[in-house]
Length: 210
Length: 167
Image 1 (cartoon, rainbow over the protein chains, first blue to last red):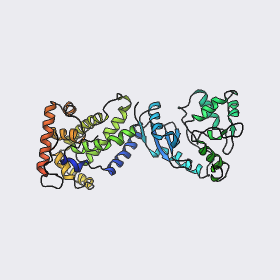
Image 2 (image 1 turned 30 degrees about the vertical axis):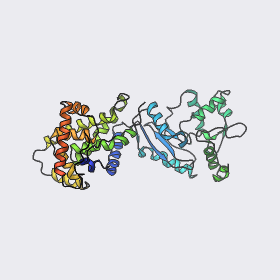
Image 3 (image 1 turned 90 degrees about the vertical axis):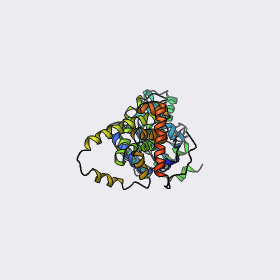
Image 4 (image 1 turned 180 degrees about the vertical axis):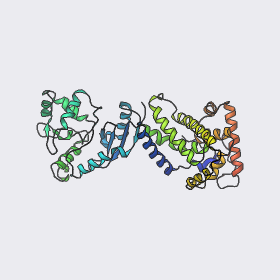
């Protein structure tokens, strides 16, 4: 990429990482001030791996597990929402703090503005119901279908859960199969089991025995 | 298929910074970088897919640098404390400072040609389109600029003696 094809220029080709970091931070601040930051993101460490969290000016729009491939997820946000995307931790301070409290067992409800634009129609209706399932409780896919007024749409409920753009915060992990089995999960079954045992007040080790 | 702007900053940020520093002294160069990327962020959704992003950024930086130089000249008149503010920010500059200064002291055409071709990696045809004149003139300006820099630094630690292998 860099065509430093004359040695006389070598000293100034050396990277100035510190300056770049400072300028990048200033760019984020200016982008916020001029309302040019359409999607801000950061990552959060958690017991279920590193989570990518992204927000628009409307609210939290995406939580992504590592297995979804964060680069791929960001590319998707670029195409579906806007390419004006910057790593901007400040906008996600609240979300990061509440997630940390949740994983520490100190928070039962997320109090965050949510942006549901990545889910439409029936899927969105399912997500709207999911946020009503209380901490530590579970429902079956059939119960969720009934609650949305489409009792026979059990599989569509499964799809809605599997494509939930805001997992953990919108608790699709609280939906199980009628036979008591875990069903599926966007973060993998191990992550689903971890969240359920966290909410049941058990140490994660209990259900993690595979 | 537009990539997240974060990737654009990560990939081209330091090249654009070098271009800015080749044309402007330190605090102004940083300002030019900031203005360049803010303008780029604003325009990015409308940029044609497949556009040469680095050339696009260097073009914006070129115009921002010209704006800043013009404003500087307008302000330049009798303000006494400009030099003082300058030196305070320049403390962080390292031993390559002399080379930056030498690069900035070249005649405008040479300085731009060296910055855009050698630092930013633009082909001479694109350099010519940006600064005016023919491709040959851009190539000549870059060569003269490099030769002048080399003359100045012949005895310095920075020079690998006579390794004029390419171009």
